Length: 537
Image 1 (tube, rainbow, N blue to C red):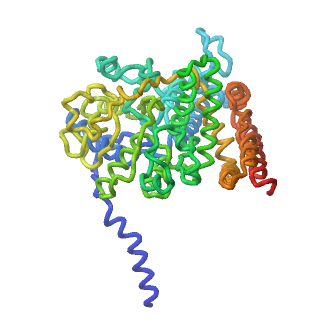
Image 2: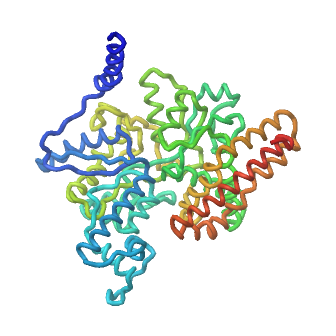
């Protein structure tokens, strides 16, 4: 009996303590409507914006609204979810409402941005008829807004027809000017000319680090360049998120590659030569970072937590994750062991958009949410300190507003990051979409095929090379490194041609190429390890 009582008590503690300590949440009784948003944003952002928007909307309309947040994972998971749901709903519309037969052609064509439509619908083939029907429909998936992620995924969704124009552009034309929210900045697109999405907040990408662990590793000073992540001192101690799960992390890798290209251009190398060479330099740098990596995680927040805890010394992160954790540690008495830096000249400033989904069940409220998010009141939530006029009530979000007027001097005392001025901080870095923009999916794919899937073999080979160098076996180390660093299978030309073509074949083509490349690199890394070990297995 005593034993059973102890077990029951332990179960009660495990279940009850988190409930008892959980923050009291506002319960909205009998709301007039529920806005449904799919988003990768964290709990802090969701809480602050839902609370503030609810008050704003009730003051504007007299109606009570609550928000149902859907968070299936990172941006990549959200994209997969939307693709599947729109396919299911359009199939129902096509067969039930239009009375037409479903086929593989229809499934492939209805959201295919490459299907060209003739002026006269009478000339449509089956694929064109499906595409035209989708774009003329109000097919929806029961979700109002897609909020958060990177430009690439939003642009694809817009071109597919899953995002539609909203009325905020027409209602507030003064917001969408060079002086307030520019259409482009430093080569990045901040809002869609067809008004299907608009940046809600700014992001940059950088390096997170633990000062105590840097000293323990023998690293002098603090990191300042992406290449610092490849320093052999950090073998087994680099924290990286999986770019195949996060569009934002893919963007960080793209910034790294673009910096390699831009450094060559700055050194006088002609652009037509600098771009493919810079791509290869970027691949080699990503390879060494991957060789140092402790893991590639599905969670974009895990590297921040592990670096702040000292489980890893250094890592890659989106700026607001780094700044949020930096503030969180200081507030909790954790000192200043954790830091974040945007590598000078190593990242552009990009926008995290928000967009209205086709068939939104609460379109009017959804457009009101976009309006609030872009208003000065909504923008203050991103970077104002907790408790300041117009600021958040629980969490300092530590993100950079997209509206330029929030960086005016009168707001400096209220901002958490008064010295962070993103419109002034790119240090000459201008994103060149023509260089890597069309290879965003290809970049994500090659990182997985060459560095993540064969990651165990890569880390083992890199470790053996480092040991050979420490032991003075320079010839073995150099010969092994030459094998390890042969990345001709994923060079710029291959990415533009063979890899791009295979990915265009769909899931089967992607799987075939993934199997081929990852198998090739596994064997290559095993060979490099054997050479580094002096011919031993």
